[in-house]
Image (cartoon, rainbow, N blue to C red; front, side):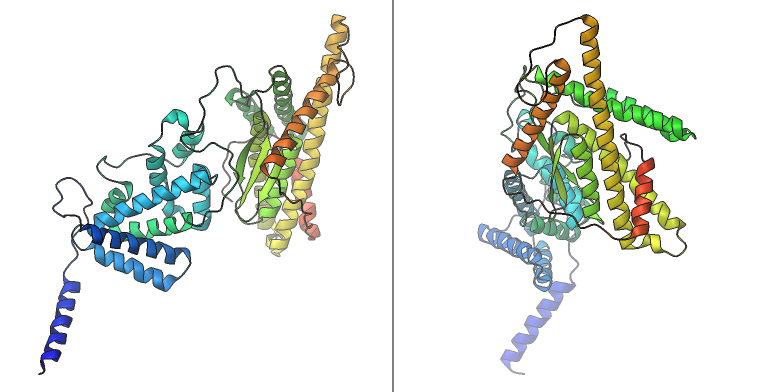
Length: 471
């Protein structure tokens, strides 16, 4: 046998032995680990291979991505390399999150984006990365609701201080499964577009002012009263009684908004319009967005739909946004239940078609919008009448005629306040979305779906609910 053939056989045998030796259990990088880190040049090579795998995953080149993943898995069997790979992944995720904050993304936005484009298995790794990254900032320099957004997905620092989160999770769940999830997450984060900045970036939030107020948001006491009225409306078998409770709940929310507007008018420059994002679940996004739009419009808010990303930005004063959030969730839940009931009761299956459901939800939104506008207008007129009656009873002289919309007297001051707040919201939308394009919605044409949606809207409860809708 020739010398060259012997060398080739020896090389193949060596390769077979290398692949048949059981891989050592991955134990992370805890104290006392006997594995030494690879030389610096190898560390740079591992980082380059990790970045290359992320790039292949991000561009959808599945064959190249799988080859890169297998190469990293093979490398992880070498002393010290698993620790380097997981550590580099954790570092890359931190860099990507910092870029995401500067591009306008918040913890809740990233969570919903990951759920929409990947799946729930990736959320814990995202939560770890966000908890670790945001833990490097002083709490006072974060937007007020960011800690709550982390708590909502149970994102917290649970790993030892001498490890990073990817290393710790790989030690607990296995190197390759965590590697695949972390690579897919990193690939998605590399493709994030820039969106509107509605919260200050971490580390830049100003301290809360002791003198400034944020208006009078619809807090728990008010919402609890609304829920009690709603529960009574749902429990009574009498339609007239249910309608009385429903009207009272809607009037309570509308009246609270009006009182907050008048209070804000006495403390100028402290109650500014703000923005919040509402994520819309598939399917029937356009019809659900229509429902959110009419709810927001009735509560003096404006909406901008980012259709490619799956969320709507609601701009308005905080107290009005609270009403929008509560009402939209409740009404969407009621409409979905009614639509599902129609489908279950249909023997022919016609009520389970996509055309029927699109028409149902669109008609439901149209009629809900009419009802909300009527209720809000009635409450506004009642508030004006109460102020005028109080002034007449006290025998007070009318207040000077205000400039702008509205007439003489304090009863007309409410009109001016509400008009001014609406103008502030319009200005905020124009500043935040200078290139927004308004488009007309196409009207679905299934007559049976339209009629069924209209009927459902006629009996829907116009008050908030706390149930979560998983559409």
